Length: 378
Image 1 (cartoon, rainbow, N blue to C red):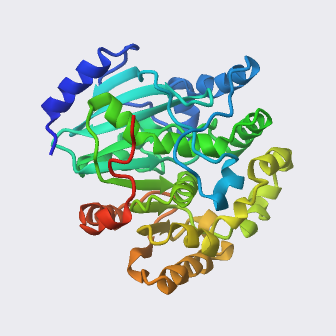
Image 2: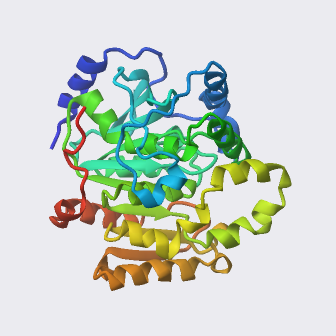
């Protein structure tokens, strides 16, 4: 177990005082159901996203990728043989504060492809039981994931996980609160040879490097928790790298072909070209049976709200999960996959998923399935 005093000392020794001053709490303005409209401007993520276009125009984007190897079956989606890796330059500390039972460090660093990553690292006060890589969904922000004063659909799952005793890394998944902005950013990056899908997954995967650079501590058991669009990224990250980390996906289980042909997508014709560029490499292929064959025997738990319209039975929720379940069963691992449909909408629950994740990360079986521990050489 790692004490808070030791962590605080390491943080101040390794990164020094915050380079950008900020408040000492995670108090956020009330969002009244439209958190992205408040957070993006208040926290500067609108400017951050637009800076990607400035970086591209300045000719600073590069095709370099020297991180974890991506399996051949996933390379058409990631457009590279490897994930983008954080550069060797130091982390830029933007903000540091405290919350209920944990502290927060907000950092920024560059990926080798030339794009910056910005995110929050939550560190428990009472020692550390492991590390959770948290991928938020559309129209949410890392800060909102750690604050429950006025929660969005992420339901402050970052705070809950920190209070469970886990370090939590949550990077900002680049978009300006909607699918259109994400598609347009992805299309722009693709025109310069950079994969937005790779950028997002690399930002999530960088959590252990971030934690090690900020504290000097390594060797933690690592789990993954993805929500909504972040669940899609979490599944693809584990399928691409084959690291078999215990993974929870919340608010995602459907037939992508049915979803992409639904009124949710086709009613907005203005984004179809950008969406095609973003997903032209068979996004619909990487769900269900095909995806399960790549991630099995990764311990996987799915949680879906009973009133989650984007993942309803009509969009193949039960069918796709049954496909994945059958792959696990035929491989001899039926106990490593599960799903619960809780009473709720498109939101995080965690009621069953958090205990499941705790059990998996503490289990001796973790050593046999996870290929990440102590595997990163800085």
